[in-house]
Length: 390
Image 1: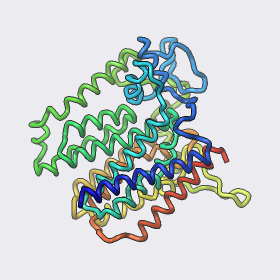
Image 2: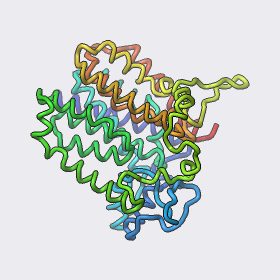
Image 3: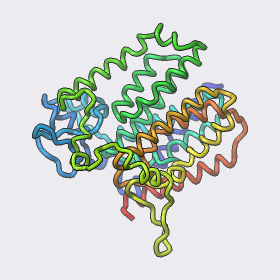
Image 4: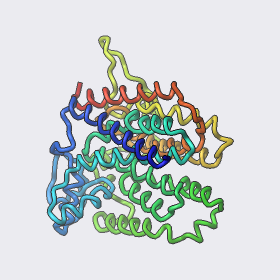
């Protein structure tokens, strides 16, 4: 009976994700089969298949790193790793379908994490939708453009790492985490949280990680690959290309600096403006993160209420969010054209952990349900309007 209920809810979550995505596609003109003009990762996979690290020429509409008179993809490489087998055997890469698959998988994994956290089926369903369709993740998950597909994959892979940690599967946990780092490098900050979750499941201390050193073998292979690729392209094992984007090579304060702190902190909390009686949402550098992803407010509430239940994990998840946000606000930009504040999506899985370990309410929470409805409607409408440039 339990398995039947689980299967039904997984199907329901998947169906809800598909329906909301289809609404965005229909009204914005996007679809998973639409041609993708910003397909840097596919171009990089094709270059690898041809035996080259660089793209061979400039694509003026893409953000490419210019180094040693050659043009390289300037983003972390994991999506290209995923596309490479398809390119190698000559199959077309429908990256929009990858985006849809990762969106559905991310919602399902979120639901499973919350269920393992002893949340009721109904609340877990509501939260899974709040984290995916009801957050700023929706905007980046309905499109496979280079800036968005990596964040979409990153959420799902980081959530998978947490799920496997809760299942006592250390090897898969750290492997998924290494994939996520290959999408968004600051996901490296999730390592202490993942270790702590594993130690809790085993009821053991740090010595567990030394005894289970083989858990890190898959992640170590990926780390060596990333460093080899970085060195082969840029002569630096830690450089994946972003520092060689023109916007950063020409920046007086570089890519990261405390100089950007004040303006970027304001971008995290600023509200849309009213102009000529219309609500105008900031498209560059983001807007209020709690407005775009109300689940962050819920996570803060649950953290305060749940500190006595799993205090170490809740506090570590909070610190992870704060550390991610600090790295974000020290960056020169908060993301270009966008709806919401998409860089904060990297913090969503830590918020999931807070709610999973701090929330034990079994009865349906109607305020939560209303918040989920708001989140889905706001992000669906906002995503459509943004893609239509309205």
